[in-house]
Image (cartoon, rainbow, N blue to C red; front, side, top):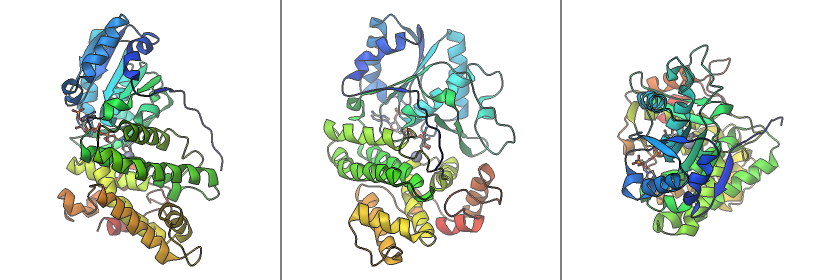
Length: 392
Ligand code: NZQ
Ligand code: ZN
């Protein structure tokens, strides 16, 4: 277990922290580009409150609205252009993971003369790794991706039907202002998808990582159990601030690098899902909810003991032995039942996806990322046929 850990994002967490936006932004610039999604922040008053805080601190601003779920590279190009035209020196992402991801790449594109798609890893031999970015401040309005405190962004190219990621130190936001009150207007389905996304972030590290990571296992189990306890409460009553708070903290812990540190595994469920959302523009975690349990059933055959641990520690099942596959599979069934109970789809047909293009999904996933043997990294590495089998 060898690893290096560094996360420079200042996390400012708690109800009411939005009012500190101006004070925080002043440390990084004088004119902000405020990036927003399809309008939720305008409808629920968050945008006006953010602007009031900026004005009180003497920060001018320009706007880039309309970032779509599964944010598109064309929107990134537009945002970077606005930032340059307007002379912005700091970017404020006010929205969900899509808005935050687009903002990160806009911040990098600001200093890059080429096309920002060069930065998104899609199998090209020499991706441009951004080193210089405008300072980024994230203000998440949805608990799911953990983008507010990590160095990753996921962007789609609608022309080439690709969706992939960039990871770079420069993409760490300077500050994440996390105010769980802002998530109280998130509808039930998006709240449930957020719970599924954050759980999947830790199950990827848990099941694909190296052996001998007892602390990371406990971190992951803590995140999963917390999400399973508080997620349904946040779904049942969106105004339950305590539930919103616990879910949002769990979403950050799940993917800020700490819980998975040293696990050094692949993210096969995410990689397969990204291909599905590239083709079908589905919500990221709705795709994960379908793929993850089937991937688990596939992987349990190769590493039953880890799935037995999951079944025992998460669902309190009792195995007959450390490699009791029945127990492992029961745990996976219980996990799938949980996802269903909170309203997530668990079959591709529920997402209106049939099997016509399954071979192409597998090929495209592998084109974007593969190991030296041409397989999708993970435990076990997946061949094209494995991916097809899981999707079928
Ligand atoms: O666009 P608006 O109008 O803001 O509405 C959004 C959108 O329709 C709405 N929403 C957000 N906050 C709201 C709200 N509605 C009411 N009240 C609020 N407070 O929710 C919808 C979904 O928003 P989106 O930002 O797309 O969701 P999410 O946060 O789940 O982000 C998903 C994107 O992040 C990527 C996914 O692939 C996907 O593109 N991911 C990013 C990661 C990262 N950067 O680390 C990791 C993840 O695994 C993931 O891949
Ligand atoms: Zn995810």
